[in-house]
Image (cartoon, rainbow, N blue to C red; front, top):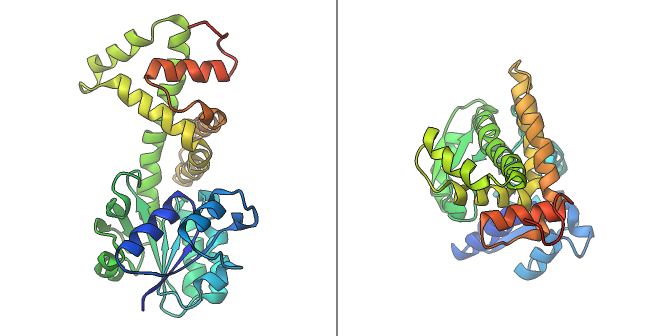
Length: 295
């Protein structure tokens, strides 16, 4: 029987558990550093899914054919290190954390030294809409072989990239400079534009220089993503800034995006709102930029 272990039982880990079970893969184990807090998202997910929390990462991965590492960006290397003592020889280690090429290479070295097969994976879209059918870019010396087996784990949209660990991470994080940067830019622009009463004019003008689109809806979506996932996005952008710096480029934009994403994370409780202007005003009110009753 195929056995899969999850290191990290947040949003992504939960989707893996649910979709693997739908495929008939039911021998599942999980470890999360947040299991010590019964009110944490990981603990709530474990109870909802009926998974007994392992006492350690090593216990969770023991005997697993596939280990999925889905932790926060800064914990890529610690997650790998925590698993090595229990990792079976030849086990796949699927690292889909949004970490820098350098950190991916460190994690790979840990796994390979323990006899595992490290595969870096870059998730190239939000996972929610398509779940395990989402596009994953694979990398590393074992990527091609894992790509042949991926569909058996429900991963139907994998693309095998470079055999060198770190290239997939660079692809993901250089893209994040644009995507997460757009979230930060739209947030900052509309917070100020709403103050001056020119937000509709600003949004309408975007189609004069960018492709025609419903930019108000796009802005609302991007801002809401920052509000909901700002902590995680800030960590990812710290890794993106490191990636940019490793290329010899000063990461001014990436570093600024870290701060805006971290700031936005304070105000997630304002979600949802019926429209983008209402969302922006809710953030302004929560941030003390707007008095009750003003607009």
